[in-house]
Length: 258
Length: 249
Ligand SMILES: Nc1ncnc2c1ncn2[C@@H]1O[C@H](COP(=O)(O)OP(=O)(O)OP(=O)(O)O)[C@@H](O)[C@H]1O
Ligand SMILES: [Mg+2]
Image 1 (cartoon, rainbow over the protein chains, first blue to last red):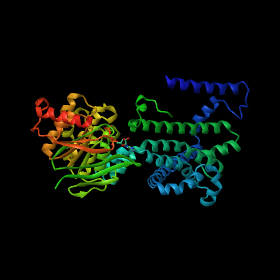
Image 2: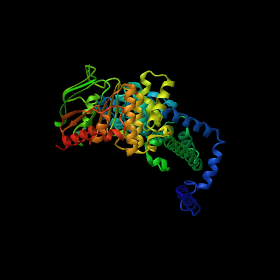
Image 3: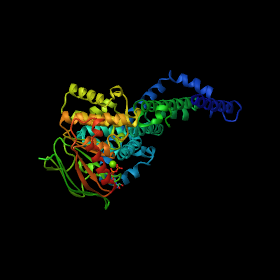
């Protein structure tokens, strides 16, 4: 039932958009109706420029998210377990975290050039924070009684980390990674859009929009990016439900807050 | 040499005394029960003995060595058992978890897990997760985990509080059997005066908070004990009356 209702909302939105174009409320060259965009969406996959761009974007995104996860979990564990270190670094983190990664594009280009490494580094920069903060926060939330229990049984330090701490913080970390997945995508596509000379979805949309005036293509590429983001999010939610069902009773009833 | 020696032990939480001055000795293989009113400091005392809480005053010694940090060869059944189980591991996985660091082979570990689960009547639930179990079943998992570990010293904090009367009687007999066969020393906290007399070689009666030992009673009942006949003997009735009077005081 909720699924049908969600779908009804989407269909209604598309109908309104279609009607706005057909009735002449908006210029169809600026905002082409969804029927045209959908046709164009299908044709995108025959466009070599688009496919190359999409592959570059998705690959960069995957690399960036992987790096951000390793970095975020690693540093998060360190900061979470050494309070003094956390105290010193928090002001720096609080300063760096809200910096929009697009504002760092000129600096990144000057340092790294305009190749894929630039957008990957900016993607990592933007995506590390939620994972890092969730990890270090979750460390403080590990049930002390659980840690005491395994300490009593003289479980080795290593197995306490791998068998108790990591599974305890797992749900929090996974939520961080899920949030970071969309942040990384936004940062990477944004960088492609603003930093000329690279390939990728953002660059593709930029060229099609400014020099070609092809808003239908731009929107079709946007739909692709949006769909990709949705699928990734749904994938992470499914993983969360499947593997950390013990984390919340709510998930066993099938309702997880997105 | 005595197994456990507690001397002048006291603990204060932020300046407020929870345990004031407790001294006693437990000999190897002995089963000692601690009874006392709710909130008198029994859990605090056990946590000091387990090395989880540094005592404010006094000392705890195991085999003559002073305890600093968690000693080896010890198992604890915590009062809040549900929080002491790993939620992402199955029942069998929880029982097995501490055995890995005891240098046992996979086969030995598996047979110990199966044995302990059958003792507490949870063989059927081996593959379930803690959140799928009732409170009493979770409590039995934590008992099984401690028994499978076969510690030299077992600390149990209200281990049978959440099970029905029949299961409780079975678990009491189980603890008596296992400690006899494995030669374990057991220190068990309980609210239930009858239970303390039935199980113990000696009963320590604690005062109201902050705890001190008001009385030590030797339980001269024959072994093996029997749920029906032992509880009907004159000695049993005399001891439980004596303890009840001490607690009331
Ligand atoms: N972590 C803590 N911080 C502060 N005070 C505490 C803490 N734990 C226990 N206390 C206090 O210490 C006293 C003894 O607590 P304890 O849990 O040892 O009692 P208990 O005898 O085990 O009680 P019960 O029979 O209800 O389990 C109580 O007054 C309690 O309020
Ligand atoms: Mg208690």
